[in-house]
Length: 110
Image (cartoon, rainbow, N blue to C red):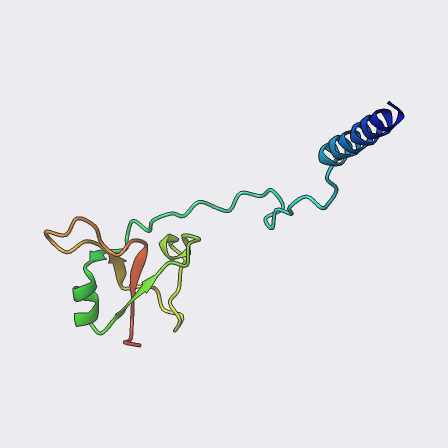
């Protein structure tokens, strides 16, 4: 009988410790927002920029430059690597469902 009581006490203690360990509050640093909560400016499309296909861009001696994901190439003040504005925005070729998304034609072949 005494042995059964000891086993019961050990089992109860172990189960209690497991419950406490499983419910312990996790401590650690919260993820840090690199923008500090600021919303990046929305991309705008330059209404004066013409639309052309990737083939038309290359035929004019240009090169297709894609956006890195921040929408910067769609802003009116965007400059290509040489400091010149884009020749135009890349649009779909006739019959294509979609163009190269988020791309412009920059002067000078790579």
